Image: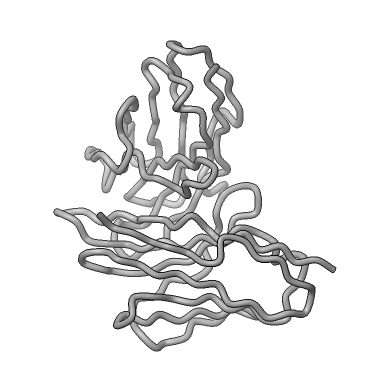
Length: 113
Length: 113
């Protein structure tokens, strides 16, 4: 089992460019999440998908969109990148939402210049 | 707004010392409290606590929750250099039909030989 995988590991964008971060899990989990981690800010939830076919906003959704492609895959899209979106992005999954631990992917380090 | 506060923010100890990390919270509709360890990459799950007064143990690590006073502690005994990491506390709360984790900013533990 690979667990939670993310691509790419690193990315540099110019302001205004778009990109999609990919996430996949092979644990048959129902719920998936996207977080960003900034120095001194801890992890903040961007979007989540409680189950296949549903997505909801988290704490900091502005500037992002998501797609739950199937049960395994959950992508995060930046339509027009801004320097404020420079961060480390983590995808996570859990069996269900609610009282189940979340398993995290290795992260994507994104720099927007 | 849900809030999770960890203290201290950083800590330097010598190998063999015992440390106590603190996490206090203010959330509506508390469900569980989780501890994660992050060593320069993805957070890895340590404990989930849902009931007061029941200690969870894993080797030299242990944790306990006090739902009346709204805090948890993570103890590490006989620390080793491999314990050096950022320890994250997260609280799960039930919102309107969903559950979300709110993370603290973490405690950075450095264990020196």
